[in-house]
Length: 470
RNA sequence: GCUCCCAUCGUCUAGCGGUCUAGGACGUGGCCCUCUCAAGGCCAAGACCCGGGUUCGAUUCCCGGUGGGAGCGCCA
Image 1: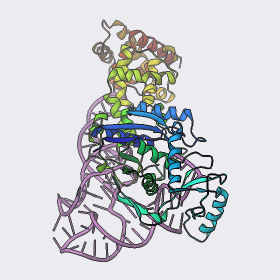
Image 2: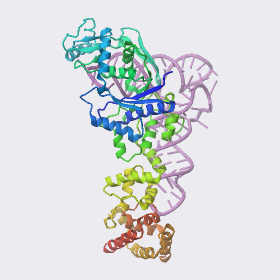
Image 3: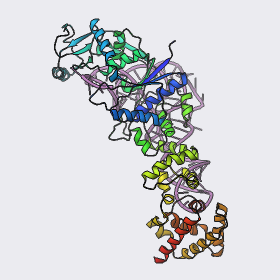
Image 4: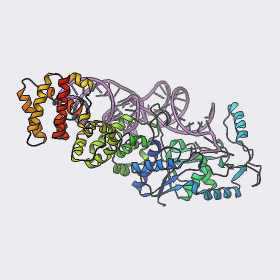
């Protein structure tokens, strides 16, 4: 039995979107578990719409996700002779024929048929005309069988296919001489020895025609497996305008690749009740037999939950490194440090994305005299009564022999002990606002600690000034 | 319109004829914890699209309806 060979064949006409990413993931996981070769092929036969930037974006997206391929990327634009030869062969065998109908003529005839309620397929006007190479501008059409069934056993949907007569003779070469997707894709799948074609369910209806192509090419079709579509929150096909779909968008929004993979793999596939799948578990457990048939919505809330899960699990150094660009993008660049690492550990429990983490780290990244006091927080917690305690705490902190959590906590206790009836909450909030500008932050001892003695002191002094001026 | 496909809580799903007073997860609400925000723990509300069959018995099998989706290109 031939070794397993799969492929992901995106067209470089935009960014890598999550539907494509999931298709790539399924191909990747399937191939990795069973052992085989995963081929990457760029389908750029549509020269009008294909761009180098798109190709780079698609490749970049896959790399970011950690979906690696074994062969390629191959570009169909570089394999034109292969398709040309295949078409000539089909022509020579009379399995394809030249068609001189122009798009306009066909459109007119199509309109007429549709107007009477019929289903349009090419009417075969040129099928028996025997146009030779010198017939002028012409396209080439494949002779599709008029009867019989073009059926196959889909890996996900089971027995599938259509009656051959439902199909018309499809164009396989444009008038300008370039091959169409169906032809190029099938020729490549044959040439590359692809054994399993795992792709979106939107190709289910294309498969019968492609089967006819395999037959005409005297080739054995691969095993097909169509995976259900990912639809938008409105239940319709993903729209680049309505839905956030590009992988790059999620990367910029602060999502981790592992979270993306986990999120994507569970839309349309499940393994019992398990929700968390590490990269290794995906490649060890994924199987086509557990792929569903109905399309699913991409739930952003679930992604947030997964992302936080992976943020919580990420090693500290990696998380710090990955957070840096987001800090810079937020206008608060900082150098990696022991303190930043400590902060990240405080923030990982409170951040759904790296963007959110960067926001929460703002108080740390910003200069001591640049703290902006949140108006609501000030109104609620900056009572004149807090002034004395705040002043007392500043002195107490200055006296700490060592700068650690225990000493800071002791300093707070000492202050509390000296002010009758003062609860920790009444002291912590004014301090929190003083050192972070906001009423929400990690634990007050940790927050003061991470700033360091000097920065904490400077901030409390400044707050004292602002408070007494008020 | 025609062809094909799909159908369990708002969402992702478990279920492969009796174990279902239908389980889990996200989200939502409440409670607990608590220096704030989170995190965490506990509890709650919440679904088998409808109608026929088949069967002793249907969420599970079959048919029809309804609803939704995809495809019907000299796009991929």
